[in-house]
Image (tube, rainbow, N blue to C red; front, side, top):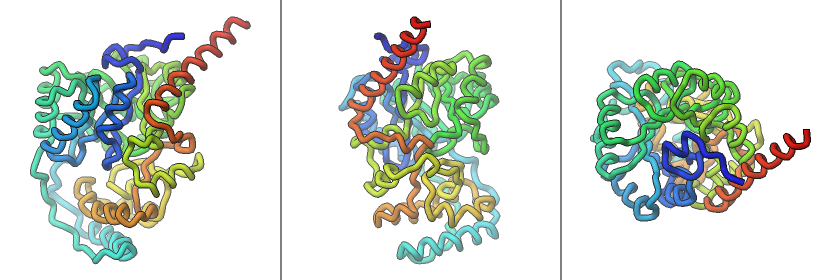
Length: 364
């Protein structure tokens, strides 16, 4: 039985129309990306928060482990912060000081807004210099000049949409592949900074009649049955993140993994508490403490400067109550398998599901 060939697998030059999601926070290692690509799917590295030369180092490490296509993901930064509501910042920081105290950290005053030493354009330049064939992005639409620069190199561009209007904007802007991210997905909403949480079952068939480029379904897909369902809805492939969190090639804190394996189907919630942007995480104390203040949170890039030291300390101390435990609604179905075995299992599950459908059809 043959795996279904789709517009996505043809466009990306991969055997299977499966993209490993570019999860941030250091979870995606070069070993994970290469292992996924070596099995015929598309590995994706998350470059958010890395300086250009750090990105170059990671790309070289991936290229030393695979000759197959892979992608690098970048985040479009927030617009420059010109005016902060410091009354709100003080209220938010006072709540964070209570968390700092619980972690044994001193109180910290709100920092002065600063800009990183590099730009998005600097990051993209390094990715292009290294000959990466596919670039994905999230958080907002890439600036037109960067899109033009990437397209001029013949690099495939992947964007994320949480709504039909976002998908239309991406296609009009020349984006080659669109990830339709349902509200079930773990981690951050990948589209523009809006609180759209349309279910995948609704989003994919909503997009399909209006979008001509390949559509990738993302959100709650954990097995071959989910992959086949997404293709039936009209997607050309799938993106899976949470499904790879049980793989040893993924860099996940042991306490984080324990929390994931203890998940129930209703364990995750949408929150802005960690980064100021809507994301799905396993519910914990940090989220409960900060939820009442979410309407007061400053822009994401600034807010992260407040929470990053707290999150780092939580990881160092193994305090899952203060870690971001990003995961999708399907976390209860996580399987602890090496990447190679997981992808083999997914392939068999798709094939078996197709076989059952064919037998059912013949029996009618």
